[in-house]
Amino acid sequence: MREYLLSAALAATFCFMLTPLVRKLAMASGAYMDLRSRDMHTDTTPRWGGLAMWGSMSLTFVIVDHLRLVGTAFGRELTGIFLAGTFIMLLGALDDRFDLDSLTKFAGQALAAGILLLHGVQILWLPINGILTLPSNIGAVLTVVFVMLVINAVNFVDGLDGLASGIVAVCAIAFFAFSYILAVNNGFSRAGAPSLVMAVVVGLCVGFLPHNYHPAKIFMGDSGAMFLGLLLSASAITLTGQIDVNALANQNSRSTLVPLILPFTVLAIPLLDLGMAIVRRLRAGRSPFSADREHLHHRLLRMGNSQREVALIMYLWTAMFAFPTVAAAFAPLWQALLMGLVIGLISLYLMRRSHGNRKLAAREVLSENAVTRKMM
Image 1: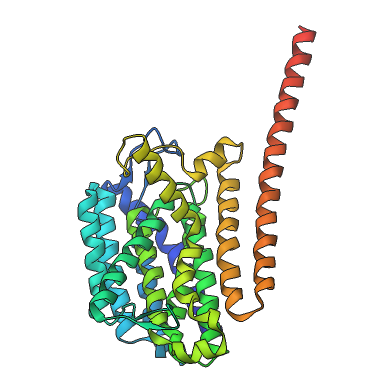
Image 2 (image 1 turned 90 degrees about the vertical axis):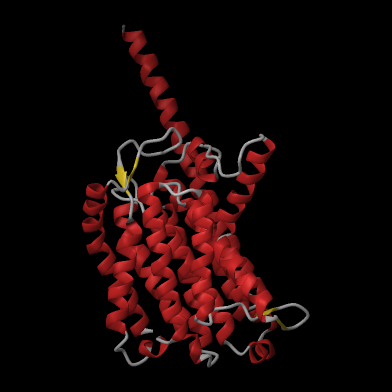
């Protein structure tokens, strides 16, 4: 655990230090977002946060490669993840600067998934009627679809200061917990690569968040959102391919489902928001890729919550799905459900408190205005 904590700390430190430098580079290069009617910010803000994340991950890998335990995670799969991550980050950086069309980005995402396939990162089985081993061609297609889905889910939720950074951090913590428990407690030592990648992702998000939290000084942009989405999806696939699913199933049948279910439960909120947006826009006769102000975070803002409160509430919603899923693989189901219920109640309390504070402040303003009018 100490080496994983060191890896996360190094990634956080490097990302915190590199982000201001990348911010200056982005402004000088014109990689900033012009103000749009749907945006929450009021100042021109640079993008390219993904460059700082990629540089921090690279430096971290160079250092931890020499550690006794974490160093064993370096191999063909991790090389593929690094190369695919580098490619998708560069694609996103170009989009942040030149606004590429959707077809170009989708093609690039598929190519990044192809890089993973060339390095053995592929979905090999599905938990259907026990364990269903997939033919190579079907597994490859599912891998590409899965990678693209997770990439776009993360990209889609990046609509508010600090929102995507925090949600991905929660996601990575949950996935690291699952892979680490497998590696240490259940003897699946080869689960080290996904554990390392998720520890680094936690560090990247923690180091980037102080610069990205409201009011944001820099956005992660597509370079960061697609980069984090690829790391998350690749880690999930790597884990499923490296564990002995038959031995795992003998210990706990629910555990075989978790590696594939966890990315969807962790990303339940952005996936729900994505699905609602597509349905909403198609019903209105518009393109599913057109923008609007009806996302979940927009609705929470209209309820009277501040940007920071909305981000915190959505962090909790993500944890409400992610952490119980991990707990259900290793603990009684009732404990996992109780955990989700407690987290959900905390988020509900924050929403009600924020709403109550806004109503109280509004009443105080009305009272002060009434007193002022009487005095006049």
